[in-house]
Image 1 (cartoon, helix red, strand yellow):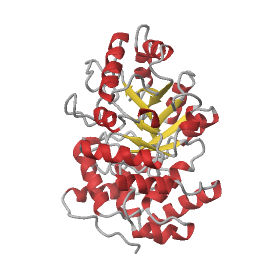
Image 2 (cartoon, rainbow, N blue to C red; image 1 turned 90 degrees about the horizontal axis):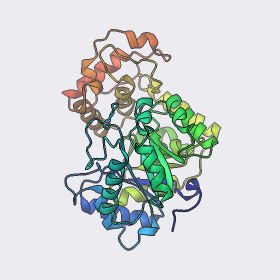
Image 3 (cartoon, rainbow, N blue to C red; image 1 turned 90 degrees about the vertical axis):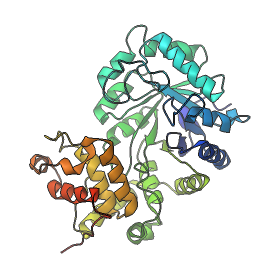
Length: 392
């Protein structure tokens, strides 16, 4: 079995996230391809792809691994939170939220075990905890952490992890508890703000998995601009650029990719097999990436977050990732679609709500014309495509 030993040594460079499967057939195809490609880990949750007790990603992954369960590390998870920034006041076992007592954790663990068709997990995660209040809830007597420790001692799983969207300083505080062998956090070319946490975890022997390494799929497919700018460095596609950036980060262990087909598995594992970049090479990639914005007559948002909070409640760095995708990487309709989906999902991600007050621009260390960038993006809500932007 794969479950014993140092988890960092057992994780393949590309690992599988099970959130994005459109249907059962996609899951079966993708997991089979992962097994052939040597992908060693699959990340599951009760909520992913859930429409019923038999139609969800845990059930699909379990079916795909029937008869070869030991070929892949299986991770499950649940949360005392509500999936966002609050404590989960409502216990929702079918989604794995609001898990705040020992009995509730036992029930959700058993639910995942039954869906996956396994006798145990390899890894279990304290999931979607984005602030200290949510973590403190997990540590209450008789709560999540107490029961997780008991379950691990009883052989229900071997490796305890934590999954979060918190900032670097908060993540490091989580990890200083000494309870977690692995951390899953957002990290990609369009948002590397958690680099300090990645480095700290690596220095302390904690495995780091980058969620959304392809920026939710934005950094995939083909883009002539990427080969034109990076081709002499051997980088021919957005996937090679994205995974090279993630996997060369000091402290990074694996890129957790939400793959949905055998073709994606082949592309991602081939990109991850390329030699890692050294510090100088990584710096050159970043220099050229920022230069792509200058060549297009726009700035590059580095996602530092100094612009927040926005008086209108906008998540400015998240919105400007779409600006990078549209006007720096020039990913075309895929980038436009990504922005529109985000804008429709929540008001915080809709550039049309920008009041052009200038507060963010006064804070921006890169002196970006944020209001102008927001205006350009807002027109994507009605226009058919990203407008061309060129240097004067």
